[in-house]
Length: 429
Figure 1: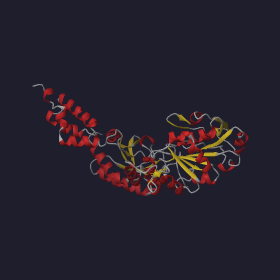
Figure 2: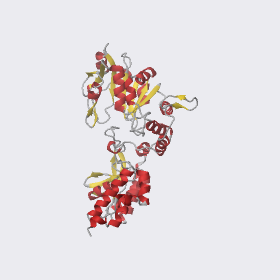
Figure 3: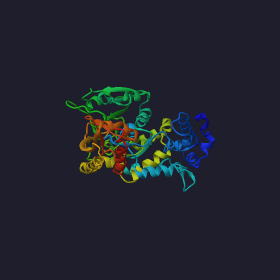
């Protein structure tokens, strides 16, 4: 008999209780796709027809999304390609709590419409008292676009030539700002811009002065930058884009700008990301002068840029809850990382794997603290482990002909999973 005629029908396979339960959890479309793939394997003679249901079950994803969790062992703490900051357990729990109906814009005490995201905005004000008011939009680029549109459309934005940055994936700040209808007035030179350069450019047509932290590169040598405090007397709003989202100074990154310092120096508005050093979900912060923040909030564009209930919930939990993973990754002592590396290397070596503990250097990533190296420790493996480990969702980096699994960017709770993935990859490497 032709083996293809023995392949069970789709409805018969879907009637398997295990697949019925999976369809309730993942959706019928995903399960049917797995069944079809298993049926094709049976037609090709790669599995027995009786094994179709089991093969379909084995081929199901863990979640009803193509996004898959990975272990970031690259040593880049905030890896843009891997989703930047991992959320804290409190933030993940908050996402679940807000996933259904929630009082995002409703006052339970009065039964009337209430301020949108009041809890998150209050938490942000508490975390950065130097700000008179705050607002959240969907990323830092959105914060800049909103500020430029509301304050400088049809007018000039004065900006240093040394701060005309490209922010990644080909997106350039000048193009972003020009799209708002503002005109850019470049001042100074690539390496040196003084307060006098700004003063000479400010006039009746100036909408704002923009100070941009060059977060993904450094200029060294004969350089000069005008401090924020020197620009606040020029009669126009000073907007400071600090980038990585520190709200207060961090001794681990003494050169990284923070919102509190910028506001105390006189910046009228500060913009930043929430999914970098702040450690929260993707979002853009606007902090500063109450009148200006309200002006941005009332602008029609704000409606298109506002965040949803899930972002508000996760951001509030990040600010109110325990320190997020990004903080722990940044501040973990190198000695404790080396101890973890030694223990993992010893375990893997006992199973015949060429594993070494190695001292290495990690980086903040996502445009934060350019050039700063963080002492770290890694598991060093033959480079042939890179592909099989990547297929098991453990992402490292090749350095010096070896695969490094840098532990500064991983959660200690993942050490067991890393070890298991390496052991499972032994025959393929």
